[in-house]
Amino acid sequence: MKILYSCLSKSWGGMEMFTLTAVKQLLKKNISVELLCAEESRIHIEANNLGIIVHPLKVSWLSYGLNVLRVFSLIRRIKYDLIHTQASFDLWLLVPALEILNRKIPLF
Image (cartoon, rainbow, N blue to C red; front, side, top):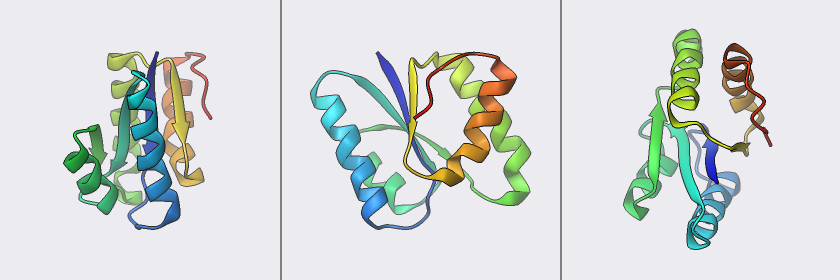
């Protein structure tokens, strides 16, 4: 199973810390997990330090359309079995990318 975990928050609090904990636990169970995160955010830095595969995005409304295409390209290229997000904001990128792909990948 290959999972894309998403947390595009630029903050550093419980949600971001939980995301890293969840990713680490899945990796311990030999489940392939990659992280979609905000570029240069604390979660990006911490995930890099832990050796987690990260896909950073510059998060801003000005780059929204381009980011949808980047997420679309990532999902198409890697072929994830499941996508999990902690932040409802991420749905603004994930849902359109999945609609463009016309693939029925479970999104939690």
